[in-house]
Image 1 (cartoon, one colour):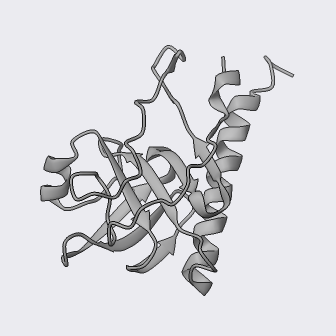
Image 2: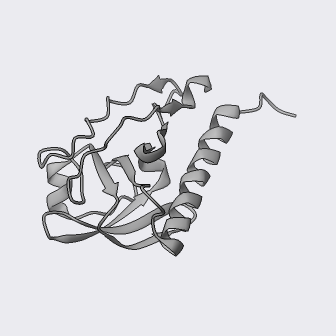
Amino acid sequence: MNGAIDYGSMMHRAMQGLIAEVLAQVAANGLPGDHHFYITFDTTEDGVEMADWLRERYPSEMMIVIQHWYENLTVAEDHFAVTLNFGNSPEPMVIPFDAVRTFVDPSVEFGLRFETQDSAGDTIEAEEAPALEGSPSEPVAEDGGEAGHSADVVSLDKWRK
């Protein structure tokens, strides 16, 4: 056996798989109860597809909300696609799981934070996520509803080398 077991990478992939499974269930059955998701992602990541005007407005990071108004949610092995409402303008988006920085379901106080790494493997702290206020100036899609309560965010990458 060569080297050490890379638990950090394995957990990262497992948590991406958890997000994929949750989104696939929602795609098939809709959102149950009060569940809804705040997903922050890196807009510069390879494979992110979004309208040019959104990319100009959010050149590095964006938060979306999957709650009341979403369509065409599909999940693939390495990404998900969804159409969201931005001021009564439906916009399709493709978001690779590698671009996801936070995934929060405030209805059950569940959250994950994926920290980025530079080419040398050093952890780079992710920027603090914007407040989940839902005001028009915040980078969220949907109807702008308030979060209701905060969620604990679990960071798994702090154990990576």
